[in-house]
Length: 303
Image (cartoon, rainbow, N blue to C red; front, side):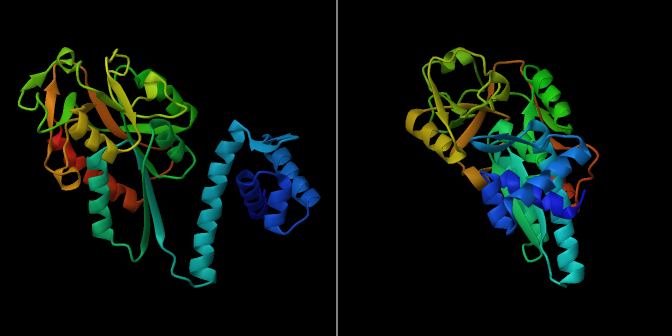
């Protein structure tokens, strides 16, 4: 297995056909096909499915390409620094469910390291994409939650993808609403009291199983339900329609403003927020600093 074969495989994975990949690589299509076939025979894994419609990655191929990208990127860093003598920025990327405190921790980490020597990326996205991003090395760390309902299913998926979940904090369940909401002055709110107000839920796309829901109590029969794609839309719907969502209760006014509050839900339900990482791969100094910033919110968790 050579670095050239890994590069070829990555280009093929990104292309719609072998012909397109060969054009990008400036080699003949038969030469590229032979190189990929030799690689598959050497590792004993079918990386691509071939059909009249083109090529596509197999599940095993997706995992292999994730590792291949990491190897090629690391080689490029070494080559740029020691052969071409370039100053290459170190990279750090994190994927997360829609937690404002996770974004706030990212902001603090970036402020401390600065952006002259580092290149940062943050992906606030769907639950399954958080998992996929860490699996495929798009992100070093993924932030999401487990509870009694989804733990078994998601843990099985983590194991299949060679991922580990590490708990950061645990908390009760809170109703997140704007301060002008009719129930905003309550000490506690029961679900029955919320039935006339729209529940706001993050859209999960093709992976809309209850187990991938970003909000707890996903199987509850809500009378009124609105799906949204981003946090800014959620906040607008809270004000415009007296909507609500269920959350950890950790509020970051520096990001969302001071117009919102969290009221305890009458429920014994709990959630465990943590981070995903690849098994057997050490967390980088940037990742460690980010996790230190996230851990500061442990004391702010409302039990």
